Amino acid sequence: MYCNQRPEKPGNKKEFLEKITNMARANSLWVTAYGTGCGAIELRPLHTSRFDMERFGIAMRPTPRQADVLIISGYLATKTLKRVIRVYEQIQDPKYIVALGSCTINGGMYFDSYNTLNVLDKYLPVDVYVMGCMPRPEAIIDGFSLLMEKIKDGRAQGWKHYKENLDYYRENQKKIITDWDLPDYNW
Amino acid sequence: MLANFTSIALTIVGALTWGLLLGGISRSVTARIHGRMGPRITQNFIDLWKLFRKTSSIHHGGMFWMAPMFRITGAICVLIMVPLVIGQSITYNMSFAGDVFLLIYIMFFGCLGMALGAGNSGHPYAVIAVSRGLAQMSSYELSFSIAVVAIAVGLHTFKIEGIVAAQQAGITSWNVFRFPFASAGALLAFLPMQMAYPFGIVLAPQEIPIGPPTEYSSRMLSFMFSGRAVFGVAKLLLFVSLLFGGASSWLGLFVKTFLLYMYPVVVSSVFPRFRTEQSIRFLWFIPTTLAIVDLVRVML
Image 1: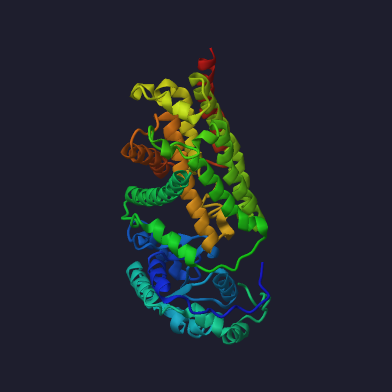
Image 2: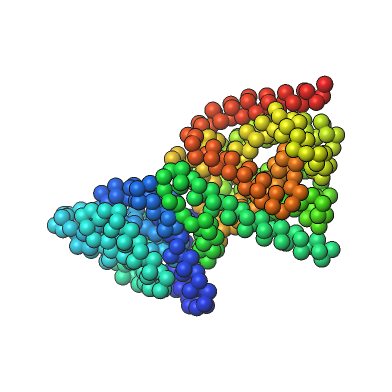
């Protein structure tokens, strides 16, 4: 079911309550189980016994409706972008994006590929980048720690930026997705 | 009257807290069995608060909104109809209002509401999970009901207070020893009630990820989590009253419910999952037969 209205601009909430809630948000990050690139292979050791991300309150959710975090795990093909947009917009606010690997920053080894995006930030609001090719679970945990700090401080505002600058993101997305058949508002 | 209301309100808050804490402990225990450290035991409280404060713009129709309310209402009704501590009449809450049959009926009220809500969400996984859940529910309900009837007929009372009172002559008077077959049947039916493996075909993460609540999020999901926590404690209290002699003190209540809660957690950690038809076949034959053996015994 789609929405036919532009997203509402998020208002300012009570500061004290937001501080407490941000603590809870930082310690309860639910990740959409969706791997876009080769980096998804590094998420398996992360959520099994060796690295055990559940000790930080991070858990995988099989549906975007219940998730908080979307991990773009490596190169993002132009075909995948449409699905990623759909998944991201189905996640309810507040939501965060963690981008793994060099490919999401500048294309990495696929910098001159015809079917891979080079700069992810133009299409979706990234909150934390984790460098490496591919980043090992230790690096991903480090990235999550950074995200937690940003959430606690109230600085992880990518989702607000996306709503406020929807026209900019849509324009860039439609340049890549030539057969755009998504509804304009997926909230 | 005011004391009654206060007692009911405290029971609900206490059950929610104890249910969430038990959930956190079970996550830690499962993690240790996996060789992991696991989350902190207060993790469920953090998750609940986060979900409660998350915004939502999902709408799938009226029943979709009402399902979590149905669930939480069913859970609270069961909770307040089971006496807590023997001898402290204030903790009996509304247990005068009905007998075990009414309780069995209300226990499935929340599940049926949830089934309608999940069906209204229109997600195919939710619908598959609902059909599985209802099929399995009709299977374990049978063995559980026969076990309860066997105990009630044996003790000549359908009132929970009466069943608890009949077990106060020492450990050997507990129904789990007086009606061993019916108790075994009821305890086997307890596993699918708690959605524990090998009967975890409703949530089935590898096939129909998360099942009925697929489309639920934010505040709706937090209500469902709360309902599940309260309902879990209500079921524990019911089983403690029916089979384990009730609780004569608060400490006894916590110890008994804790140990009973750990039983499906431990079983769940070491078993793989049945397929739907295996689960239903098992529940129709083994626990039901066990319960019938004791029913025939008390009838003769």
